[in-house]
Length: 196
Image 1 (cartoon, rainbow, N blue to C red):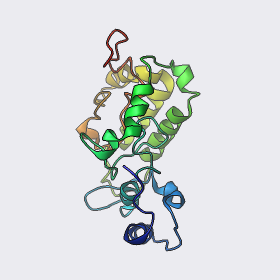
Image 2 (spheres, rainbow, N blue to C red):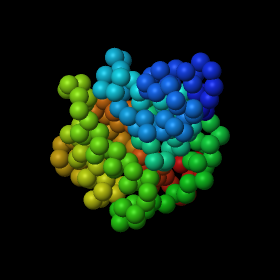
Image 3 (cartoon, rainbow, N blue to C red):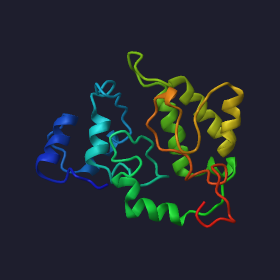
Image 4 (tube, rainbow, N blue to C red):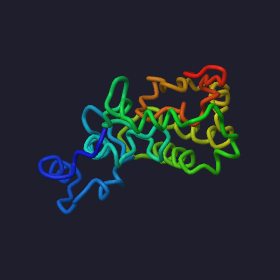
């Protein structure tokens, strides 16, 4: 889970994918970290988000469960993947406490605000009807803003099956990070258990 597009063929692949031969590093491609790629045809953005996350995993926050970036498609992310196994990912999770911010506190927390902003942006990504869950992402963003970690009850009341803290509903078609970092108590963290 590292930036691969530092020199040579990988940097050239990044440049070609983004249509910009002047890109010298992943830092110059950061604006594509949350670009929406619809797989497997690379629809919506031509695969630019997917390729950027794949080649610039560190820059795109793939090893940070609670960072500003939301999308993981293209990241070496998932069970037994390099990002979830990385020292940074493990250290971040181990440094968290079994405490949860209130909705009001979350509305002041940069990464939470970033996720909500990106969910709202996802809801309006122009496409030809290939993206699932756009209307739901807008409702999720509003519920997260209004209710913080208690947003799930609100979505259930609106008859939206969103999944759980560790997996988004497959019906939504989302490949976003999940919420356990922000909502440890809602997600089952127990102060009485060391490894919860």
